[in-house]
Length: 454
Image (cartoon, rainbow, N blue to C red; front, side, top):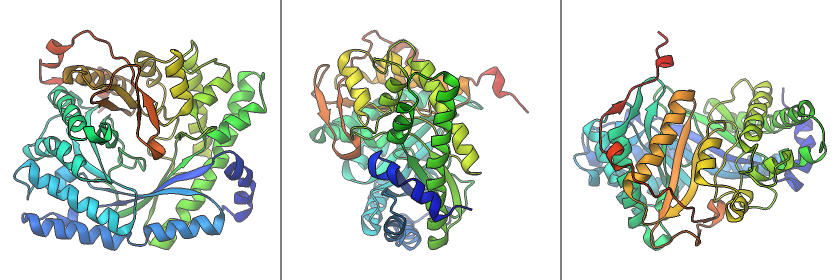
């Protein structure tokens, strides 16, 4: 049993080391809202989400006050809208109308983001899924709290290169549609390989079709806690280093388990998973890159970075699974550039490049995340970056993702300010050589041989 004494043990972590529960995310199934009448569909979606989540924010704030645990965000994820809207939507504008409904109800219940404006197209696209994808620029430019994700590949199905090519164009169009906000729309759009059904973190959260009608997933974050623990074992060998990370991850996960259990009971929704992801913020001392430096690197990106990140990711998972039977989502180390001051410093110093970040994604939880690139980057180049990351996920049987932001009107050497948890980022250079002929082939890259396990 988890008790208040365990929470008391974490007081110093909360007060001095930036430990927080990053999000309580309520997953809501919209499958029972499906209707061939678009107006009725939107009404059902609004009503289902409002009735399910109207007490989510209030409950999160109550738990935070009672236990003294900061709960930074309260969020909602829903069934991929490409599935929900297929019977009613006849064009991209119809789908964008559903995005407006999602944004309206998110404002009404007070959550900061709602995820699930999504399509799962790893093997092919239905007409409805293609319409949703083409509607993304309009949807994200007209809404404030809607997040969008598209799953383009998986270990079992391969990579849908037609969708990869389309997403390069969609990201460019989304950047253009939100150029007055430094292309902020792209910060709310992520593409996946092997997307999990129970991820509580944005922008990639959606409610999988195998989930219950409602579910509570909690994301915990504690880069500062891990760094502080490692400061106490400087110079020790790898065995001591690994044990320290594992024990710290255990304590952090127990906090998430407590919050998840309380939220589940009070909201009358089953507990799903705790996602123990070291998700950084722009706050000083809340950085995954700083952990890598504490392990022994001058900067993130120096030789040894991939090995250090692999060690960190593995020990975080090992500590988490000992603390909770339901660790899920992504759970590991996130390496978003704009949200991590240490990563920003490494890019500025010339230690960290796009290619090194790609290598790091082979061993961490997500992928190329919150990376600002020049606004004149070609759509096919973006598609090539996506294809590379999808291949890493497919072959390594892991989740990978891409969230790049081609900032219209800006180039290498400039910075872009997103604000809040999204932070700011230097514009990173992109390999200038063409992959046009590769991307324009079309079709599907087949699944690897080890996918055949029946």
